[in-house]
Picture 1 (cartoon, protein in one colour):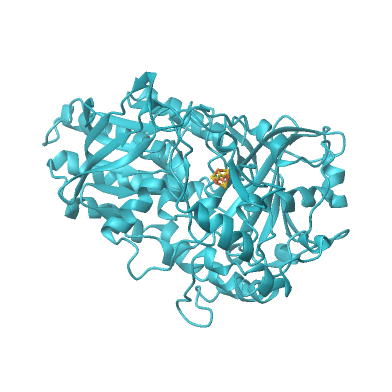
Picture 2 (cartoon, rainbow, N blue to C red; picture 1 turned 90 degrees about the vertical axis):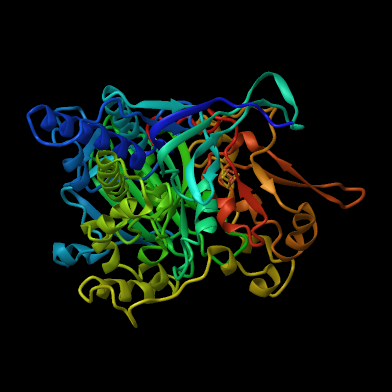
Length: 572
Ligand code: SF4
């Protein structure tokens, strides 16, 4: 039976309540106020009365799914909220000290990036700010609400609504469906939100964005998206070890030279540090476990010394889109736009996306303002956003490092040499565009990589977790605050379990058990029959989307769970 659903009409709908959408909603509401003020002062034109703007957010509260390193380039924030300091932007500290080390198992070697002049130094962070994205998100949400924009936390967009070939909004997820798919006593059907413009700012590997890209073929002639997964903890450490705003990056240990990634340590206020590791998801070895590799980083004497007598405060994980310039899909289509991480707008060489997310939200808002003023929401008008992005400094910067991801796939050492030349050469290394393949195709079969189906246990790299410095996934998930309503259908959709039990078990030994940083996938073998069964601990999920990216058979699809489920980040 077809469900009767409420329909709500708004003018502009932002799907996803992260930095990009909140910046877009804030800028649009500010620009509408400015426009109306000018009309009141006598400028010719139409006043924009009662424009309704809504932001849908799957998290229980704004910011609770917000996570990044993060060091923020403040250029876009200065344009979005010029008095951000007076308005109490939650900045952890301005970067005044910035270093990068190459780690061996027991030693650290300071790399001479400081000798490279600033405009050409890919890792210079002076003048940037260390931020907690969950806090920044929460603060922006406050400004957005003060401007009269409605934010709906606890509501995920689960389906794109079309009229013919035009997007007209999204449907939110039903609430109160049990594990068997039956309605419970508290069942509430999702609502249909209709909008003149729908802006998709769902974040990295957005589930609806994926369907839009396919529907409109927005990735034609593009490189496939590529991702890194960041696994992160915030620690409180004894006073004086690191200043708020101090930035340390590491390369090398514990990752092998054929796996790209690196560590980060950022000083925060109140003796806290943001500590994490990025692992590029184009790795080959099915035994790599990004969470375990991060725990190993903490065993390095340098990091261990920083953390001594400290305590874990919070844990989280998330993918970041690392494919760069050539992986950005077409940003507009009939009825809508894509902004922020959902559009792969991330500078992997500089490890920065916050300012690009903000800028994309703001430029989307500029185009929407023009549509509102002219009462013309045609695709041609929306395309102004695409043109403005193309001409922006942020995209110009991405163009200069357009081959970064592809270059680092050649291994750390070759990659580093090429990358050092990339900025002065305007990004042209070898040739103007290097191709790439999706992350999942890089994974090698166990026998191919190790020469046997049963490699030596020592080669798999497992460690013991002591619960003081190193934590297993289960404990870390506790520190993420992640919870979901248990009696609902799992939001990890496995296309074919036979592939997991037969093909994947034999060829890759079920890498989902290792690449998921939240212990969601467990394979249990019946000792009598020898049969495998998958146990899905979906309530642990921290919504990082690694499984959606890295499964070697593309057998896992992440969809939003019942609204409000997921991590409860406050300082990540
Ligand atoms: Fe990340 Fe997938 Fe694990 Fe959830 S189930 S935490 S999205 S890898």
